[in-house]
Length: 86
Image (cartoon, rainbow, N blue to C red; front, side):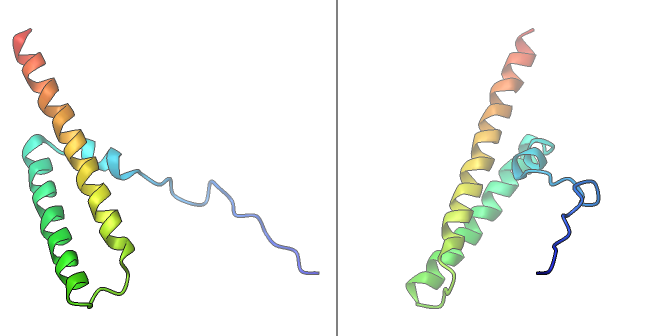
């Protein structure tokens, strides 16, 4: 029986979540990101309608990415007026 080596956790770079990378962007950058994701999602929907989309799970992924970006955008927009009032 062959033995398997365990992957060393220190050897692999730490994965940064999509939310963490979105939080580094400013409001204008987030708005541009949402717009780009919506365009990509529209293109995927058109591919699905014309039977050209082979991997339909990408629709779900882009829909969730849009929701993630909109959530962080809303949080940043709520933080901005609170900072101006103080």
